[in-house]
Image: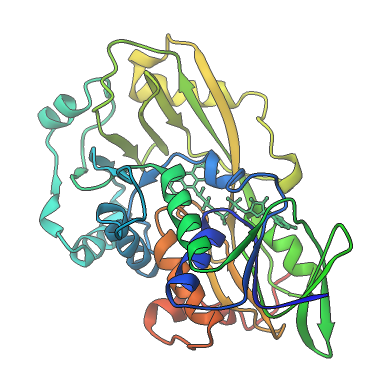
Length: 374
Ligand SMILES: Cc1cc2nc3c(=O)[nH]c(=O)nc-3n(C[C@H](O)[C@H](O)[C@H](O)COP(=O)(O)OP(=O)(O)OC[C@H]3O[C@@H](n4cnc5c(N)ncnc54)[C@H](O)[C@@H]3O)c2cc1C
């Protein structure tokens, strides 16, 4: 049986960012365990790669701003390619979003980069759009993330700082020492002891934590993305458009248009395949808002999991009941955008800093003092 200080379960963007921050702080005895043969194979490679720091919540927006800084100016040696294409983000908002939106704008390092869009500018910037034009805003410094390069940067830095990264390593059970979690058991029978075990297992985090005795409940929800076939009229430089009233977003991708109808349905994490009728549902909303795309064929459709707690906010920090168990999960639709910020916060908890600012308190799993029901 081997012994470690910290085990991280799950090699998606959350586990990788946490490993990177631990390495930056010089932590020793850290191992990341990923059950797949490759890293980042689930939600991390199935998302829309959009940097939208307006998450609707000031705590996660703070983590998003922190991550946006890393994306815009990564540390030396982190990446050889740009991590962000700041092609711009058009947001159409609902009246009930406005107070949160203005508070978010004030929290940005450059609030002057967010401004109202009139109908003319909206149609000049995104000529295919023909939906309602009220309450449209332009965020000029947000855009598309190179998620593969970001993941690679975290992993490279983590390895360089001494983190051991193991693939084909599936956690199947937990070790206990009295009332404390003291390690994990892998599906090959191997046991690894550790002082702290962090779960960053995306859609599987809830089931794994339950196995460890946690009472917190997580919900993986399926969402579909579709890319239309190539169309020479689509300019890859167009910004991203996100219309909250209709629940629809789109951006140019691979010569076509990547589109999402913002669907969500509860799913068992092992059954997250494309649902019948999903492409039709996306096409229906596209017909309303960007009708020029509706005639093209579906080049590619896929689905992925966004995972939530009851209050739909992240879980970063110690489990309320199980000593030695830490959460880095329930990242909903913002795990990539917030990755560096949440990784820093998770690393602080894992190193015993006991962070106690407003952001860490809002995301602390111990906010659930009443046992949740399944
Ligand atoms: C359709 C869609 C669009 C999205 N768009 C965006 C977007 O534009 N911007 C944004 O910021 N976010 C977006 N998201 C959300 C984002 O993708 C997630 O928040 C983020 O990827 C979660 O990362 P993770 O590391 O927690 O999970 P994952 O990437 O799923 O990683 C979890 C890892 O844990 C591993 N694992 C599970 N069980 C075990 C076990 N027993 N032992 C070992 N390893 C295990 C899995 O194999 C997996 O690799 C989107 C999500 C979806 C589905």
